[in-house]
Image (cartoon, rainbow, N blue to C red; front, side):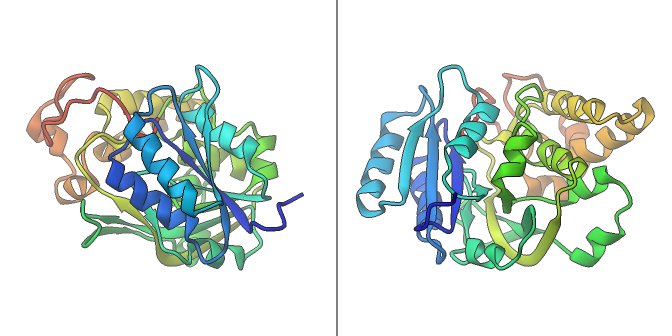
Length: 290
């Protein structure tokens, strides 16, 4: 049964984050116009400054709950623990770099579907300028012929049927970090017969920065995760190579760079995991949300 007070739950996995970004992200969740239970899932590596931010916010927002993930749990385990701990029938996911429009959950709750997904936009670091748009066009979605194409099209924000997510096993920990929480899990939900409603409003705002985030990991490491997803869902080798070529431009660089120069990695040279990103100069040594 859903908690009678809360309309939905929002899960936020946290490893480490800039304090100011964390505060902004959490506030966008706890201040939703539809009252939400917000579960921030911390790790043993979450710094004290982050915990202090959460402690301060929890004093003014009783709907904020801070939970430590089980020992040894990584990104997938943190999200799954959040879904297991949630008390509402419908659960969304928010990464701590990003923010939600305050009407996001209320808008999604207007529709009864297993996956209700909004459009998203990439914002600059200060969240003052829109850099790119990721649309959620219901007409275009219906024209997509394969489950892979549909899974690839659906993105954050997603309000999900908690029972169905738990039924499929949640986020697959065997995938890794790239695409596990959206692409692969959405694909598996669609295979299980999930209903879908897309909302074309840009209600999820992604902070498209060049610091540490999941999409800024080494390109080759992310491609390895992608190959796991494609193989898991029975994609033939020829199509795997085609999809890898189409998607890898988004891996290892900010989205605005990939849009301006799809072959950025060829121009800057290949780089190895643990080395500095050639676009940003940032060392890929951890993932803030992982």
